[in-house]
Length: 50
Image (cartoon, rainbow, N blue to C red; front, side):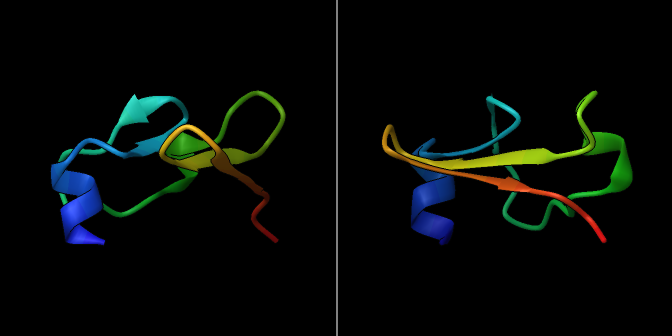
């Protein structure tokens, strides 16, 4: 995972993730109540906290 982060392939809500120790929090929620996680151009996941 660190290689992907250092390579700029990981994004949280379409913003590049640069710190491999960053924690996704409730402040990362979008207006729909989900967090979009992306790896590269083709792998995308919407995460809804429960």
